Structure formats: C-alpha cells, structure tokens
Image (tube, rainbow, N blue to C red; front, side, top):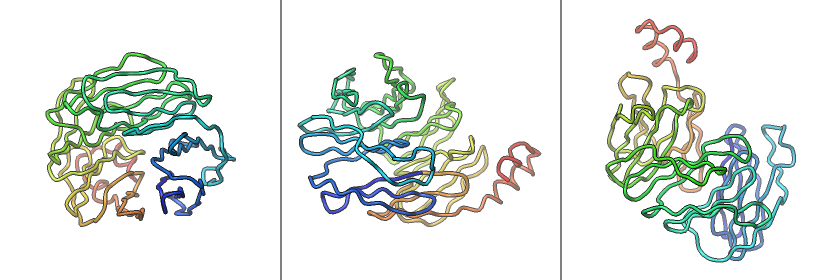
Length: 278
C-alpha cells in the first residue's frame, strides 16, 4: 500500500496509496535507486545501501521510518529489490543477495541479461521473486534456494511481470507491448492483448487484472470481454476497486466501479464470484 520515489536527487518520498499521505526522507547523499517491500525501504547511494524500517509495523498507515542497516556497496546495479531480511542487486546477468550485515549470502548467474525482477511475497527469509530475462524466460527464485525455477518461456524480451492472487496465473508484458497471461500449471497461454506497457493483478480478486498503454486503461475480468477507458500514466497496482497509476512523479488513485463485473457474473450464474466482487 506504499510507493517510493526519488525527488531532488537526494530525497526519497514515500506515499501511502490509500490515505495518500506522504513522508520525505532526506538522505543527504545522491540517491541512485529505491526499493520498497512491506515495512522495508532500501535506498542505494554511491557507496552504500541504506535499509529503513517502519517504526510501528502494526499500524497499516504508519509512514515513520528509521534506519535499520547500512550495507557498504560501490558500483552500478541495474535493478534493486529488498525483502524482510535481504537486499538483492542485479548486475546485468548476475543477482547478488546481501543480508543486513553486509554479508553476501547468495549469487545467481543467468544465461542472458535480467530485464525485470519483483518480490512477490512469502514468509520472512523465504520470499519469492519473479525474474524476467532478455531471451523471454520467466524464472521464480526463492531467497533460501540457490536454484532458479523456470516458469514460462515467452516469445519476446520481458518488460513487466505479475502473479495472480493464488499464484496460478502469470501476466507478462513484453517489449512488443503485448500483454499475455499464462497458466502456471499447464504453461498454456490463456489470454493476449496488445498496446500494454504495464500490468497488475488485483490483490483481492483472483480473476481480475488491469494493464495500461497508449492512453488507455484496460480491465480484464475472468473470461469476459476487456473493459477500456481513457487514462494517462502507467499502472503500478490494483486493489479492490482502486487502480494506482503513476504519471511522472504523481501517483493517481482511480476508483473503478465493479458493477459491470458483478452483473456479468450474475448473468453467468456464478453467484460465488458475484458475491466476492460485491
């Protein structure tokens, strides 16, 4: 429910997506990259990665951060993610995982350049990651497992990935702006649509996802036709009836009426799904 971005080269701003409140963290050094996961915030600076934690983890609206650890690290990295107990940096084909004491715990080396990675949840110290490669492979990694798991071989370079609520469907956006949904069990392609730059599954409903591109927001529910409406920006999240869209440095919250999905489920006599949407 939080989003972090850099502002003014040395500041990090964290915005709560539901309350829309913001907090500014002054790092007093050049900020290269930021990563956010649950109650952890990682800020990469020229000579180190600073990890922050929320002061009150029990408060879902808390935005007060304190320094948890400082990890000495110099050099460039392509991508950065943080988990409950680790920081993971991407260097072209290589992933390096450090604990908060600065000790390198694991290293994974892929066959081609890594283009996308995302933490998709899990118990502390056992989180899973989605990794998309230039050659189209989508891998799943666990921070406590040295062996990557091959999920899907897509036909083009990966740009964006997301897993559905039950982890049974994988949404892929590639460099050709195609959005493709795969069944993670059968590995079959179940849906495809063009003109997509980013994609997000609904965090509360299994069969609902949205994707954006070329000034259009598209919402796909179950096997029903895609619903479209004008929208500028890039989709970064979808929860319940709210879609979060990033336009420049501005995060916009868009309320989406779910009545159309409700009536479609009722017409199909799928009362269980209709009740979930309601």
